[in-house]
Image 1 (cartoon, rainbow, N blue to C red):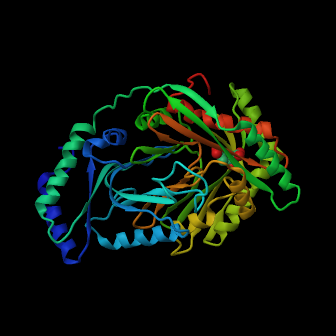
Image 2 (cartoon, rainbow, N blue to C red):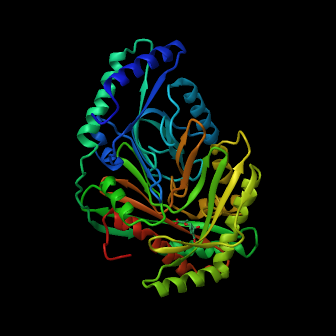
Image 3 (cartoon, helix red, strand yellow):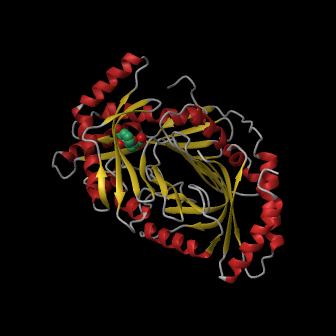
Length: 468
Ligand SMILES: C=C(O[C@H]1C=CC=C(C(=O)O)[C@@H]1O)C(=O)O
C-alpha cells in the first residue's frame, strides 16, 4: 500500500460523502502524501486506467512537477470570451467540490490546460481537439514539491453514490500506483526519417514584407513563426520526449498536453504569468544569439547580445508592454532597468524578470487576457502586429506561443508561453519557432535563428542527434 492507512481512508470518504451530499456538492477531492514515485511513470502508464487525456508539467528547478491523467471535468470554450468563460466555469466547479482538508501548494483540484494564440482559427488546422481553450480537472494527479510527493484523486458523486463506490475507485488508483508508480518506463527510440521546413523562401519574403511595413511607422515589431514537419520511424512517445527534454534542460519548463491521440509539447524558457497569493511573476524574454561551443565563445556572444541595439530594441518593446500592462493591476512592481542573459540549451536570450504585488480580486485569467500576446510573441503595437501575423502566416499557430499551465481553487497558478514546441500525432510532428522582427532585422539571420530554435525539440523527438 503506497498511501495512508485504509481505515483512515474509509473514515475520510464516509465523512466527506455525508457532508458533500448534505450540501449538494457534485465532487469530492482527496489528497494523500505518498512515498516517492516519479510522475513520469504515472504519465507513461496512464492508459492502464483507461484514460485518454494527460498533462505533464515540470519547471526549471523541478520545484514543482505535476502530472494529471483522465478527465473528471472538461472546460472548453470557442467563444471570443474564452478567458472569462473558463474563469466562470472554474469558479462554479470550486463551489461544487467538497474538500475536507487544507491542501499544500500544487495539490487538490487543479484545472490544467491552455488557450490558443488567436481567439479564432482562420485556416485549416490540426488543432481541432484543442480548440481555442481547453482545460480539464484530472481524476488522478501526482504532485512533487519540496514538501514531498502527493496524490490528488477527484470523484464525481450524486445522490446514489455509496461509500463502496468511492472506495473501489480509490482502491483501483492505489493498485495502479503500486503496480506502475515505481516501474521504470522503457522507451523505444523513434528516429527522424524526414524533415521539411515549410516554405522557407516564402517565410523570408514575409520577413521582408514585415520590415517594409515598418517604414511607415505603424508597426515597430512583429514576431513571425514558421514550421517544420518531421516524420519518425515509429510513433513518437511523449514520455520519452519528456525524459529527453528533462535530461538536457537548463532553464525551461517541460510541458505536454494530450487530448485523444494528439499531444502538444513545449520546452519553453518563457513564463507568461504566475500567481502565488498576492505575488505575481512574469518575464520579458526577447533578443537572441546562438550559443558558442566554448566558454569564451559564449561570453563573447553574451557580450555581443547585451550590446546589440537591434536586440535591445526588440527586448525593450516587451519590457515596456509588460510594465504598462501589469502596472494597472499591481500595487508594486519590480523590474530591473537593464536585461541580463538567459542561456537555454542552444541560445542566449535577453531576459528581464518581473515581480509584483497584485491588487486584490485580480485573477490570473484577467492577467493572461491582459498580457497575451506580449511583444515577445505578437509584436508592437499589438493589434497591428497580430493583423499582419494573420495575413502573412499560412499555418495556424494553434497553441504555439499561447498560455499553457494550471490554476488552483485559491487562484494560484502558473502559465508558460508555449514556444519551442511541437504538435505530435502518431509518427508525425509539426514544430513551431518564431522570432521578433524589427526594422534592423536581416531576414536570413532570422531564418537561421528560428532554425536553431527547432533543434532541442527535434532532437528530443528523436531526430538528428548530432545537431545542437
Ligand atoms: C517567439 C519565440 O521566441 C521568443 C522568445 C525569446 C526570444 C525571441 C526572439 O529573440 O525573437 C522571441 O521573442 C520562439 O521561440 O518561437
